[in-house]
Image (cartoon, rainbow over all chains, first blue to last red; front, side, top):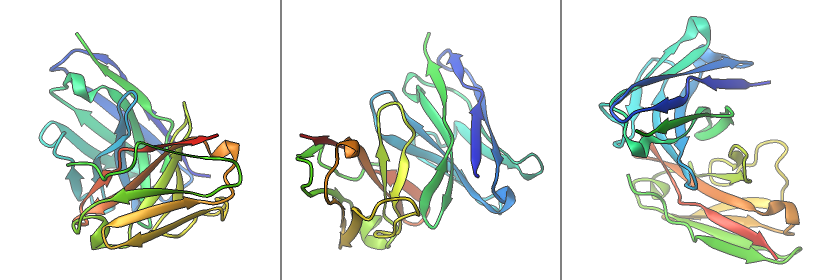
Length: 116
Length: 110
């Protein structure tokens, strides 16, 4: 069974940084296309970044230049380095595997709150 | 990136069918057969219902079906049940690189 577990969320001040982690199991992680998707309170999901098996990356305009997605296949782990955080980055952040052009497997999410 | 357009809400009685539309552009929905649909109940993680326009993952009832015409995708729920009450989201890759979601449609079972 696929299991994705996010960690690293918390309260951070505007302008601050946070690093999220996602531990994966039950899947061939090194061959998986992985994403971060966030969901602000009361809003719909928003895709923000992905990384392919070849370490190629893409970002949503809303986070480009501030967030960095990375992976460590030896540790079956996905990361999201978030810098220059803004109030509007407050959301639950999900680690998501996509396959067949769909978000097949989701973690339970980790809450990031940006507030002074 | 602007979201795909969904109606904010739909409703139906048990046993009826409801349709949820998702409108995009030639850069996303119209550019490929890669639309997917998700169901989210309060406090839960989104669950994949439909992928590649009309395919259902194992375990998803055949009451759920999807289709697409040009730049608009649709989710049909037949034989509506009380447990179908949820928010439904569509998504599509845009220009094959990024992803865009719909704003969500709240389904109320009367």
